[in-house]
Amino acid sequence: MADKAIPDISLGGAEQNMSREELAAVAKAVAALSQEDRDLLAAVQESPYRLTTAEQFLEFEKNVDCFVLEPHVRTLEDLGWEYLEEKLTIGLTDDLRAAIDPAPFGRRALEENRGCFTSRGYLFPTDDPWQHDRPQAKQADRKPSIRERLEQSKQECRNKNKAQAPRKGKSEPEL
Image (cartoon, rainbow, N blue to C red; front, side, top):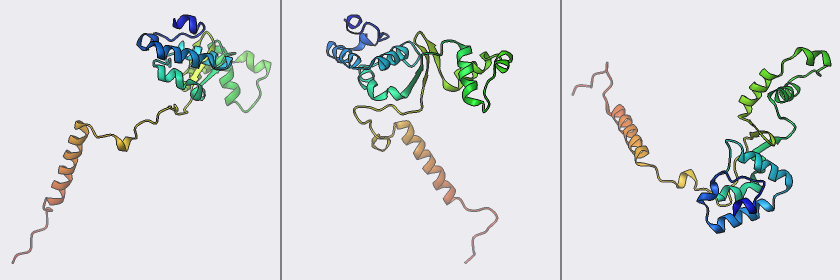
C-alpha cells in the first residue's frame, strides 16, 4: 500500500509500525510536498537521519530546514571544492585547482557537517530544532527519575554534613 501511495519515497520500514490511517495520512502529507521537498525527504530516507514514525513524516513539511540537500555534490571531490570555495578568501584559478587535491577537504567537510552522500546528492543536518505539532513536555513538568532523586538526596546529605562538621584548628570557647 505504501509503495503505491508513495512511489519515490521509501519509508525505510517505518510503515510496519503504522496503522492504515497513519499510512494514509503520511501518503497525503508526502503528496502535498513540493518536488524539491520530496527530493529532500527521499534523500533523508536514504541516510542515517531517516524518519521512523508517522509523526515525523507528518511534521516533515515544517522541518525541511533541518536538512540541506546539495544535488550537484555527488562525490568527495565535489564536496572538497565546495568546502574550499566556502572557506577560501581568494578565488581558485585553474593553476590552483590543478595543484589541489580536494578529497581531504571533502572528508573534512563530511566530518564537520555530519553529512552523507545519497542518490539525490549530498545531505547534511542543520542545527535547526525539529518543530513538533504537539508541544513536547517541558523539562520542568517532568518528574525526576528515582536515580535523579537519589543523587539529589546524596548531594543534599553531603552538603548538610559539610555544614555541620566542626572546623579543624578552632576550638570551641570554654564556659
